[in-house]
Length: 62
Image (cartoon, rainbow, N blue to C red; front, side, top):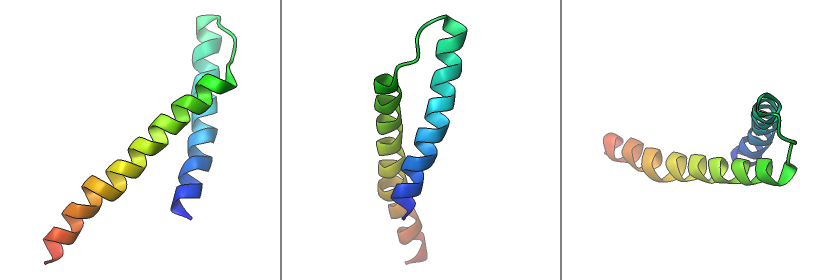
């Protein structure tokens, strides 16, 4: 469930940021670039959350 919510929030926030940046730059809004940005950021959040932060919390409790 946390992966689904991360993707939903990523799409919502990513589309808002992408729209604002393209509007300020005078460019046209691109869904493809927005979804690519969301995919990269979501994968980074998954890796950091599970890999780096998950291991450090388990080693402290031992």
